[in-house]
Image (tube, rainbow, N blue to C red; front, side, top):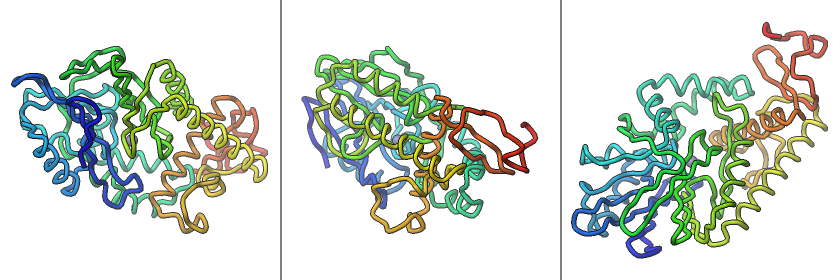
Length: 348
Ligand SMILES: [Zn+2]
């Protein structure tokens, strides 16, 4: 599906089969004249259903792939999985942030990186059997690109000129550690990727090496409010115009989630992130936590962990170790208390 949003600027819907996200918004900006470079913002999973659909739509727009440069907003495979497949011109630019670009390349060279990353979740209550199943079924793993990205780092404040548009690179870490948006100030268009979505709420999860990804995200949302954005082209679902109103809704959503987590810890005492997630309020249409599909349990646990990390950063919640598990409790203490736990870890 192709939608012309403005002159020479198109939203191309790339299907994401079996994903609750339904589809990815890939953006095509046509270059000026017969030699001008085109820009493709994000592209899709590395799977035939995405590749065939995107190539068909690019053909319908009469696009010569040799003239296409690429902009990758963040490391998720539904946004970058097809990049090296589409890269037919070795001189083409592939813009990506240093942080997310390096992570894409590290994970595609070292397949064990994924195992280390998800094994971390074991300490937060996801079982080893669930983790093993995730390694073989998670779309972000099995549909990732197979080759490293030959990327050129883009950073906050850079301006990329393509066709009629001057695209200002805006750093918006949170959804991933080094996510980039693009803002076109003359047309007031924000290409928000998964930083701001209209119909669904962006997933905020824990990232290794990032102590408080929700705090980072909330800070990025405040920074986005300073842009005079009047049309938002998100990474998924419909475009929308009330950008500031939507940001306020997302801020309120996380304030509610934080209250939900405080309530659970107050009512139920020390919990690991998996158990906190099982008691949180989710919009998914299933009867109980046990009916959640495994991938949704994984997302929910990551989301719970991001909120718990944020409360730890604010000093409202403390962690304590219970054997190999990390528990969270309402407390200002930040060290294990042996009286609370006979299996205090060696660090404590
Ligand atoms: Zn994403």
